Image (cartoon, rainbow, N blue to C red; front, side, top):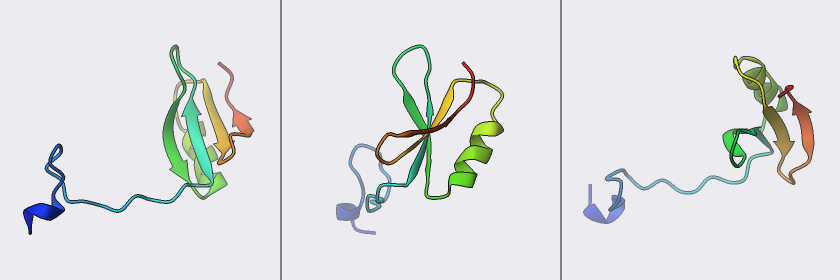
Length: 72
């Protein structure tokens, strides 16, 4: 593979950026919120969030509207 197609900083093949997903699972921790998962399937986001042992998760849509949360 040509060196032109390898990222300099990571040594990984270039991949095109993905489009914005419909839903994000966000963990609201001690510092700033962190996006842990993005998906276009709301049920996938809810199942993923429910399968985590800790609390403090939120599911938000692409506009930032809160759709679901676990108790913190």
